[in-house]
Amino acid sequence: MDSWDVLPHVALQSVGPVSAAFVARGSTDFRAAGRYLQGLPYGRTVDRADFRAVLREGKGTCSTKHALLAALAREQDLPVVLTLGIYAMHERNTPGVGAVLTRYGLAWLPEAHCYLTYAGRRIDVTRSGAAPSEPITQWLYEEAIVPEQIGDYKVTLHHHYMQTWVNANADWIRGRSVEDMWRIREECIAALAQWTPSACGARDAAHKRHAPVKRRRGNASPDEDQHLTASRRA
Image 1 (tube, one colour):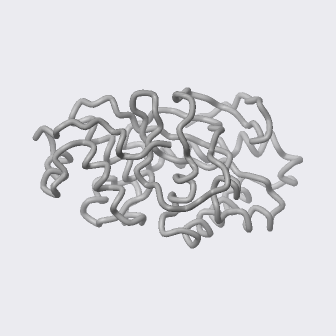
Image 2: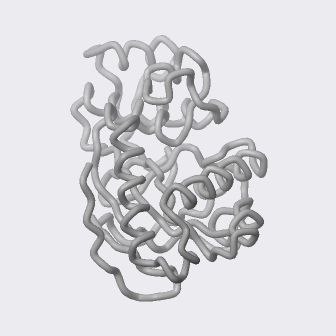
């Protein structure tokens, strides 16, 4: 994945509250806004769905930071899109989750991640210095969303995807329910937060530039070159 340095280098116009908030903090162009957010520490805001709280509280997650930038792009009429993707999370592309997966006899889990797309590139401003052994090359599902969808909508979509994945892999996951898999996923996120200062950082450093973004659905194993259709209702 690319980072803030490929965002459009366009001066910010005084056209809305998000724009005014960035200008007040010395970010006078869109690229500078991305750089500013990269410098903020990782941390969940009091209200996880309130992306505007990132500037007030001085911290943010993959979801809130990118939603805030997408809101800024909306005010500035820039073609920068907030994207919700699901990828096959394992130790090689997300250092820190391997011990949890091994404890439950799992090779990987489908994990949701928010980032930006611009000019056919995936962009993540929450990258860290983590060093995974391989990049994320397989996105199981991607769709464009709006900033207001990082709360319940994102969680619901991820949960429905997990349910479809569980149904399609009942034998492989040893008969566990979607609730079981969600609890294991939460353990992975907790372990990831302890592994690196940014819970998104390990996987963000793993994201490297690859093919232009395409909307995709599937339940394929990371070792298979196939995608099974996954229905969702969200």
